[in-house]
Length: 557
Image (cartoon, rainbow, N blue to C red):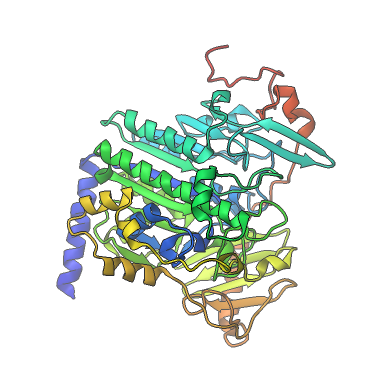
């Protein structure tokens, strides 16, 4: 055992030294929007084939205990700041169109990467404020941004419609480095953002590393009347799915999978893949049922949906792939939180962790991931919302949930019904192996995975749950305690059996509460941000002259 530990330490030393002296790795973080736990093949679902996603996951590390926040803006805040949103006043609702709120001042992930000599790109969704130009991506560390500012837009015409009171407001929301990109209308959003990413990779100076955050619109629902959109030829591949909405959703997931394959091919063609780190996560669980933005995704068998602190809302699809990982092709159940990606990826890029903000909540997990060492994280603050009085905490195997959102029905079990009434589907492992990502991963691997190894990884990543024993509803102030490794579906409340654990975790929540910043109040300014004042576009409006309010970066003025 001593010899093994010494050998591991030697490997760590060699690898750490090589990162500092060798070529810096490229880093791509791919964020799917509202993707359900059960909507990828590697979690055991047979209904929607995701061969490229599955191939990368199997050949990387499947993160089966990866946690995010329950809605978009808090998760993106945590990812880019490395801090719990409640420390920044962003623990509540996501930003609305015409919202005056924005991400508070502070250094973000792309700014750290720029200091390491990286080119930085945001492709797709921002959703962190745009009332002033200084709130937009290119003023927050990204060299380039091609995408949209709001929480969603339509998949072909890039119009976002929002209702304030009894009046609807519609505006165009697609930009390339701040300039309106009308010429891209008519192109399907998932393909558009993929093509831009592929072009960026292809044209990148191979002597300069890059950081790309590909923040897909997919598979978020869009405007009323056309919530779900996908090319008809892709929808036609899923005729075995009876429900037409679920069928379109499946096509949207399939296009997302195609995106992953295209990006891996581009990296391989450029001979960059062996020195690239790819992270894939969803920003929260699927809104299987919801008052708004239902997308017919499935988090089964997990409890809850988007906008809840149950596992279905915050336990995210996630994996990391890179040939730089020494111990890959495995399923990790170690705790990892979205805040961890800032220090982890900064470490992977050769950065000195000591220069990071000492108040980060994220923990550097790079060595743990590379060598399959014990994770340094043993607890996660899942959120504290002082307005709804809803909070949750993971501590080792335990999870404590306090209070609930107003719509308690969202804490039920959903998603199984979207999978029934279909012809029997069989998981197509050959499609995974022969997908673009699968072929390239096998080519790179020193020892390609066997079909049996693929099946074993899939089995290990699949969650199964027993029948409900002792359910608990935290709405109304109850404390619900779950042993998540043995009860991932939160069916068996153990609070009355382990009162000392409940007390300990309540004290931890109280301690976390001392650093909470009161939520930034929703403050929409639609009278001044009305798209019609800016040629029917969603545009930064504060400190602007209407209707031609151009980015300070636009030299064409």
